[in-house]
Amino acid sequence: MAGDKRVLHVTFDDAFTSVLDALPALERLGIPVTLFACSDYARDGRPLDVPELARDAAAQPDELATMTWDQLRALAERGVEVGSHTRTHPHLPRLSDEELEHELRDSRAVLEAELGRPCRFFAYPYGEEDGRVRRAVQSAGYEAAFAVQSDEHDVYRYALPRVALFRSDTNPVRAALKTTPLIRRSVRRLRALGRA
Image 1: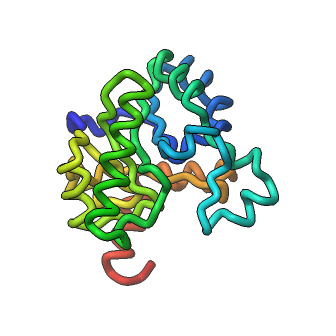
Image 2: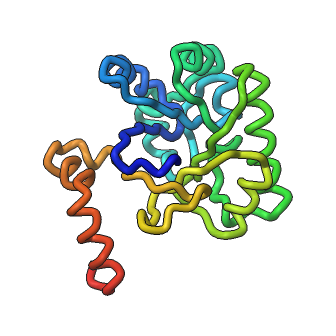
């Protein structure tokens, strides 16, 4: 957020317990980490059973298990920033203003109460955001919000750009290509021209 483009900061959405496996390596390398948790799931650490993942949650519940409050508190004590990913992981642009406010404000309030520290950051579920949602996030008191896709030349505090890596990016070559700035700029230009 300070404008230094040479900083690596790793973020994890959904607070899956598998993050615990990656954290020691990131700590050894001194890489800052922010984890985004859905407050309703932290009550019992149940799998993230949103409709888009229902089949995976049923077939492999351990893969989609989320962290409990005790696990999130332990991570916060280790220096991991814990931010909000809403209460229930909804598609935010589809919500009414009232529903949107509850997802944003209630999640932040519960995270702060449970972790005993400010909840400064937010990540958009599914990476879905628009002007109304960004304004609601700002109004809910977050300092910044992380997007999935964003134009790196127009960095906005409530749509900070990230390079998204998913399960399909486990191939090291594919992951390297996605994280190479030259490749990302080329793909962005092609999309702007309507070719990608």
